[in-house]
Length: 298
Image (cartoon, rainbow, N blue to C red; front, top):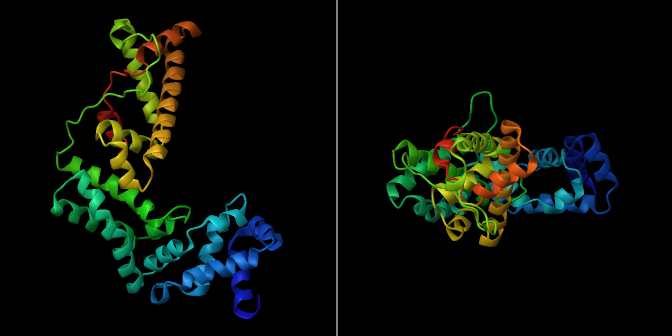
């Protein structure tokens, strides 16, 4: 690599931090990988960011990677470049974002609410949130890491925004749902047989467990159990196969149950067998509404 290509590689290294820079400098094929990334960004043509700007942005994305070479190979480089161009305000880039991202969100958003007017409102607020400059803060699009498709990243924000707007309009203010485990334990007791005095502790433990989940886990629970979206519909919203969503939901449910168990044990100071008995009783039938709990941290 010579001339401008060599300079771009050095710019990436300077922006990636001392550790990542050293790893990239020694990694076989790193120069060629950077060159390919810059070439992919250039395919945006008049929507492409300036090469130096993108080289710095690319380096910054690699700065925290455990394996920067692997991270570089996995980046959605064209999407990363498009997000940077949009954050910089390039009209051609924003027009491309409209065609490749916002236009494709209309169908999944209409599954949350069929009104075209509502979908238009969501998209307009989303455009403002992502594209308008913020006082003393970088554009939200600069938060896109390039680790997944830009469409997927924006669609998550779109779905969350649509649900908040529905709730603000009163459409979801009385939505109630139970948390139902996919596979109740064989021979498990029904919640109705749990001692009345234990139910308050179960509820308190469950509230603590829900509060401890991260936003993405909470959003998955909201969509599936509160909004009653099927795996197929969620897959269409997020661009994921339903089997992937099923595994993620199962993992969240397992995490929620473990944290509920831990909180319950701490509250009641019960022997482990008795905690296990209570957990079997609520496994599959946590008789609690998620809608209020999940709304508290919106």
